[in-house]
Amino acid sequence: MSTIFAFVVVLGILIFFHELGHFLVARWFDVGVEKFSLGFGPKIFGKTVGITDYRVSAIPLGGYVKMVGEEPDAEIDPADIPISFTHKHVFKRIMIVAAGPFFNLLLAVIIFFGIFQISGTMVSTPLIGDVKEETPAYEAGLQKGDTIVGIDGIGIETWEDMAEIITSSGGKELAILVKRNEAVRVMNITPQKITSKNIFGEDTERYVIGITSSGEFFSKSLNPLEALSESFFWTYKIAELTVVSIVKMIQGTISTETIGGPILIAQMAGQQAEEGPANFVFFIAVLSVNLAILNFLPIPILDGGHLLFFFIEAAIGRPVNTRMREIAQQVGLFVLILLMIFVFYNDITRVFFNDAG
Image (tube, rainbow, N blue to C red; front, side, top):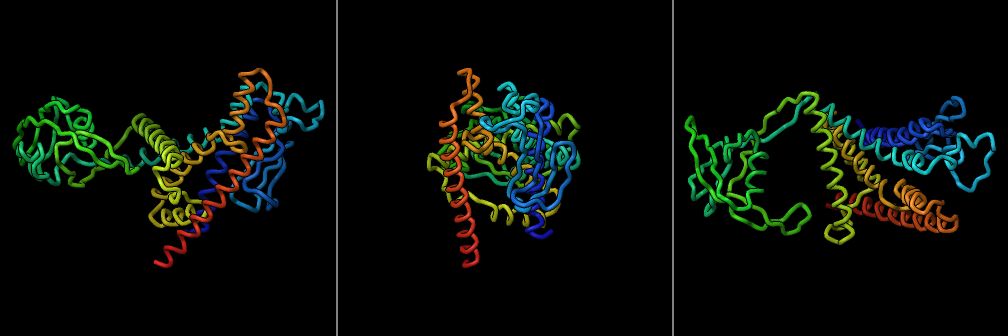
């Protein structure tokens, strides 16, 4: 699969689900939809059904759903008032706008569910790969090749299970059940507090005993309920990481050079496509979560900006005045253009730097 084709497929899927959310909820509330477009610019092909022009447009960097009476100050035929977006209750408008990013989250859940249902989930075994010297584990006699099978009477199946218990121990002594060859023994070990770097390069404190994983994994089959639960968990964790990353970027903890745009997405889409279908669809799910979070940001022009205005309207009992809305839209457009220029600059710099290296 070529990079360009992979890029178009990724964007097409993300945009389709996003706009489908707006469209379906709009129709649910009897709002008329004039256009449903994948892409911007000139129409390539399409079909009109009822009052809706379904089309694919030339520039595949977005899409839109144009609803009847979408602009508050636009003149509207009195006959169209019952299907006008502006004339619907503010909470219905909130749901219509929020449906776009919500459907991107739903897409991620669906993809993750499919992956976990078909392939299960890969988990690391609680097999010790190495024991660091002068640590609680070393002093207690743990060795490379030992397997942790229980802690304080709790059965351990995965390395993650074990790490979570040790990290949250608060430094109290733990009765660790260890399997060595065919023998099982109990070792009482008190975790020590250390300071280490997290993924954002910040110092964090945690409790450890001084062991590292062997790196062995096994595939764990999941029933539909477990797969669904795991899907929601992964969607939540990626959303949380996206939000934290944005906050850290604003605070200056993360370099803005890590921001990428269409070129980076195209490169990554091509790489993931070469790795295989599972990697490719997983990549789409991650991007879908990112797109949802970005669209929820309270920036005018984005869905989050519209939601902000609607929440203000719900609070004060009347729409935000036209002049204020126009100024906010102009500022939002300016910020969006600056961001687009910046990500394109990062993309181009990254490409030339890589080529030079």
